[in-house]
Structures are given as structure tokens and as C-alpha cells.
Image (cartoon, rainbow over all chains, first blue to last red):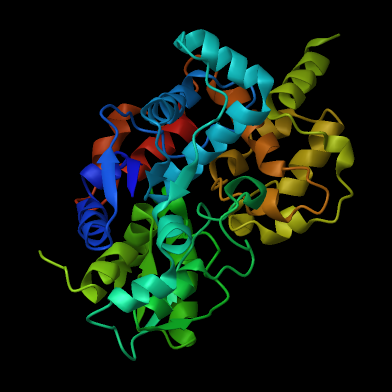
Length: 262
Length: 129
């Protein structure tokens, strides 16, 4: 299976391991991720305003490129996934935004959201299947109690993201089961960690991150896993009252598949 | 139309929100992770824009506390999408010359060795034009 792949800025820098273990695991699972030959930063947050055009163009370029290559587009960072998918939705459903973006980009074939955007987790669930992954696990993380942390961007807004039930998701829990570990359900798994406010209001972010990690711990987790570099940062740095390890899900996958190299 | 009416019309257009759909249940504010740090809460943004009472919102610190987590967008039973009103108010401020809330020369002191680029680009998108 071949996919176009959009890594995003952080996976090339501070979240290299999220990217690295994704490639290692994909290879072991028979998936080829082909990085888009040219891509630009998505901007980190979806530009919500109806009259914002320029801030949506980097996403449209990536989406158009994948279409022209004839591939579905795989993302891994929660923020990139959220931005690309919401912009794609605009290109499909908001004629004003789509027409402005198309006029600006002067594409040979106008783009109207034809590309299918998949998160890496959706590839695991929908293209390979967690049962198949479980069969390939050589190093099951037996007895390990792992809390899935979705944060906000993977699931919301659900009518656009369409990944999972926004209030009672299971995709990461099913992933945790597939690699032989035990998922921990806790009430803050889909609440915000404080996000980019770590730059504006550290106290707020510390409060939010402490709540998330404290809740995971209270419900018996030994570890938290996430797909988002900013969630990982906030939980590691800003959950000052707790010290559960926070690990990218791709690292756990590579470990379970027995392909983890440093 | 006077300037105030024009401003209200602009905020409604930029946000794409129909404030009249709001039934004032307060769920947006109830679910907002920044609730404690806000002087005006999401349901007040919706109501005050409806009433044309926009000036206090432009000066509100809430516009820099919104996390864009889409909790209010997801959970509003009427599909009002209050975050988009907060966004439109924030843009109304930072689109003006000299009103950037975050400036590049502030960045170095905010960095640590682990801070992901995602945080920086997101903060710039929210706070600067």
C-alpha cells in the first residue's frame, strides 16, 4: 500500500521520533509512506475565519499535490491532520473559500477536496486492521496500563474529522489492545492540554496538563500515549505535579512489532 | 449603517456564525477549558455580539485565552460554533496595524529546548497578523 505523506514542521525537528518510528512500523506492516516532494507548514491551527484565504493555501497545495499523485494523504501530527482535514472540508463545501483558493493558486485542474486525508491511526485501523497488527506483534506490551490521550484536535469537530466518537473514542484504546497492552479509560482523554497557551499563559497550561495527567494516574495508568507533539510537550513539561511517562504511539508500535531501533 | 453596525455585520460575516440560533444554555462556557481565566465567557461573546455590544469584547483578555480546542463547537446543541465568534473578535483586533499580540522579538525568551515548532506557529497564527 502506497500513500502520500505529510510530516509537517514539528516532525522534522522536535518530534523526529514520532516520524521515525512511524516509518519503521509502516515498513514492517507493508506500507510505503512517500513524503510529498514539496510541502509547507500547515500553520498549526485551522484558520476559522471565512475570509481567511492565504493561511489555508499551504494545506490546499499539499492536498492538491496528493491528488495529482493519485494517492490518499496520510498525516501523523494531530494539528496537521486537523488543519488539512478542515481545509479540505472547506474546499469541498464552501464555494467562496474554494473559489478564492483556486483563483489564487491558478491550478491546471481546480481543486475541490478530492483528496482523502487519513490519519496514520486510521490507516492502522481501516487499511490494515488492528487484528492484523495484533498478529504481527512479536513483543507484546503485556500488562502495561496505557492511557490514550486524544487531546482536542484528533476528534473535533467530529462532523469534519469523522475519525471516531468524539465523546467516547476507542481508536487509540483498540490500538493499545492490538499491541498487547491494557487501555485505561479516564475522563480527560479528550480534553485540552492547554495547547499553544504554554507560550501565553504557562499557569493555565500547567493547570490543564496536570488535570489530564492526574486523572490518567488516578485511573491507574502507568503511561500516556499521544499522536500530538504539543500534547506530549505539555504533558511532559507542564504537568508539573505528576510524572507519568508520555510516549508517542508510533514508538509503542515499533516496540511491539520488534522493529524499534534508536 | 453606522460604524458599530458595520462592525457587527463584519464579525458575523467573518465568523459565519448565526448568533440568533443560540438558546443560552451555557454549555459552550461550561465545557470551555479556559473558563476560569476568561473575563467574558463564550456564551457572553455570542449574546453580546447579537446585541451589538462589541467594544468590551475587543478589550477582553478572553480572546487570548481561547485554545481553539473546538470543545464549544462540538458540544453546542444548536450548532452555533462560539469559537468562531471569538476568532472573529480576535481578528478584529489583531488585523489592525500595531495590534499584534505576539511579536517575533518576544519568542527567544519563550523558548526552551523541547518546545515544539507547532506551539510557535500556532501562537503566531492566533496572536499576530
